[in-house]
Image 1 (spheres, rainbow, N blue to C red):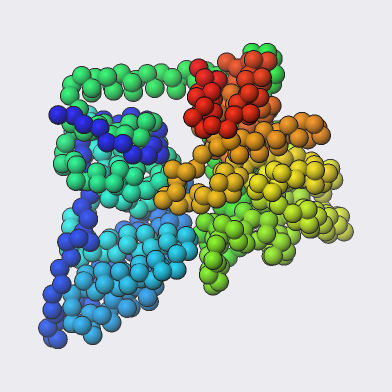
Image 2: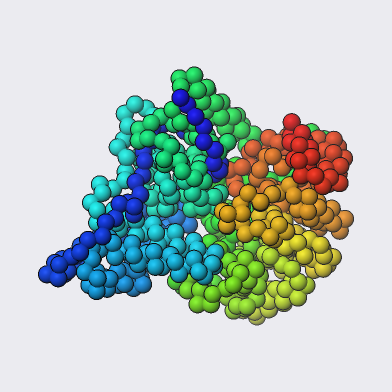
Length: 576
Ligand code: PEP
Ligand code: MG
């Protein structure tokens, strides 16, 4: 009998294939005594396993950085490589083998549990994530020690793909499955920002996560359908259901190819208003996708990705080259480059000497930049130099105080003065804008409009801070609601104030790329949407169907509502 299991939709698309259950080697570890005379051999076993896993990870890293996969993935692998040399894990396990005369896999699991316990007590979200990395790396070591033949599934010959079903997958596992005709990923744990989700989206493989005990519900080789758009899987579907899903999959493919025809269409509403659809990028590597979608420019360049996952900071020259490459690739189009937003879940290597009680509320974004003025100045100089090559504008993240704007602007002036003295060219009229991501900012816009040239609403953080929900904590992910009346009021208020003062306003959080919110944002008066390049054509389709004259009064009525169910219903009706 077919049955359906619901989880979280994290990577779109439909996959039909056979289950490959990934075993949980950690549950299979036995404890046994090793006689004194065999202890040296046991330590060699441990060392060899470490070397094997190092080799596996290096191979994965090479694959991850070969240009097909996200740069973040390489950073995840690096982290696990680092753990393999961490004395707290490996040396401590060696000591356990010697002092307790026990087998290597048991010693590793003991030490892993000890470390995980310590992480739990600290309750720091960043360290909590590292806890998963420790578990994943120990799981790899244990698999090698137990002689598991690796967990790569055989390639199938029946035309159907393989659906990987696991308790959890590390990014390294996920990349390792590439080239193995993997059709979909299904996991017990994880949320939309979990590593598996990020990598699956990157590889364009449908995925559903957070299905709790899915491993107990399916059998190896069983037929399943993964509906990555609705966030569900159908186990043991009958012929009729399979047929239906084949049809849906072809329809989705046709939709995609139809969308490609919109590439060169002018994004305007039915009543003739031009809407700017811009791309969010993390570096020059994302430019081909932005150009493929014919983006009207770059609305958010997250420069922190240049700083993450490395031991030394990028210098002025390296930064200048990256910024110039982006500006030159977008001739005559605006390129909004955000100063580095590090801290919280985007920590720099080696910056965790101080345990922060509350990283999301701590030293991140502009706060971090102002605490490290030399580092900030280097970036500002690189940005100014790149501004000589096109329409570059600078954006400061997570502002909440007037003095943060004043101090940032003073540093821009200092960088300009230095460049003038050095006779280095830059755009004298460069525009400086700020992100509205903190409720306090959205409620005190005067101090922003007086000092800045444009605003961009970061809905991801604005929602996090308005609703007091850590966006990286899967335990509260269900409370993350873009349609909460408080959130809508802050967004609408910012757009309206910008219009009143003639200051351009964009939205560059995930809401801008979600077709369910396009009509709502248009009705609020938004004219600049910045999103993942892969979403631009779908949003253009929504724009082409919209009539602002009709939408504006309907949205004004929604903004007066405060009953969530009514708001959701009314927003759904806007798109119908
Ligand atoms: C946001 O907060 O909406 C945003 C665009 O910034 P980031 O997601 O990089 O924090
Ligand atoms: Mg943000």
